[in-house]
Amino acid sequence: MKTIEERLKTKDWEQILGELNTQGFTTIPELISDEECAELLKEFHEEYRYRKTVVMERYRFGKGVYKYFNYPLPNILTELRQHIYSHLAPVANKWMEVLKVNLHYPATHQEFIKRCQENGQEKATALILGYGPGGFCTMHQDLYGEIYFPMQIVIFLDDIDNDYTGGEFILTENIPMAQSRAHVLKPKKGDVIAFATNFRPVKGAKGYYRVTMKHGVATVKTGERHTLGVIFHDAKS
Image (tube, rainbow, N blue to C red; front, top):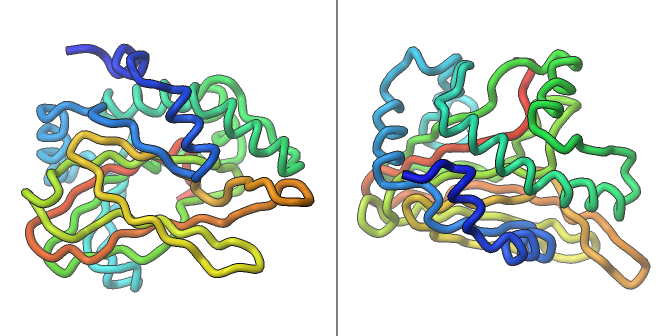
């Protein structure tokens, strides 16, 4: 089986990054194999892997469970963070430039994590999420501290319409002086979605402005839905 780095090299990055720039999200299709999805699903029940478990109902986040991984992360998550970050960092820097934000992201994920650590953000943020019938997740952003990367990814571990129904992935854009816009996505098993964590730039008549973005999960109707969230920055708690 090809490594994550080798698989990423086969993808159309001009199209992927173009979509990320123009709409704030994109799909990297068929990146994770069925065998890898099954292995990650098996780890959902191996509690030693996790530093914290959150039952969403307790905090009115939705209905479901998510678990934050401990370090060291499974190898596949480490590879995804390292290699996808290197593709996204130039786009992130361009976003900051056009929005006149005084931030510059280093070329490698290792350098970026060092910056997080210097700010006291040392805890893993990769997480696995599980929903049953009636499960959902409210619209939110995954920031975790003063140092954060403006994009993240989510990996889909089940087959929509076969393993579960409903549970669509939802992204909203809060456009200044206008109504919000929603995107409803139905990725396939093994697909990866990259999307804006907090905001993205949009060019208007007077230059670029910020469009705030949030993400969530529609109500699961039947079956069980699992995803794996990979955030590029670390957390303080």
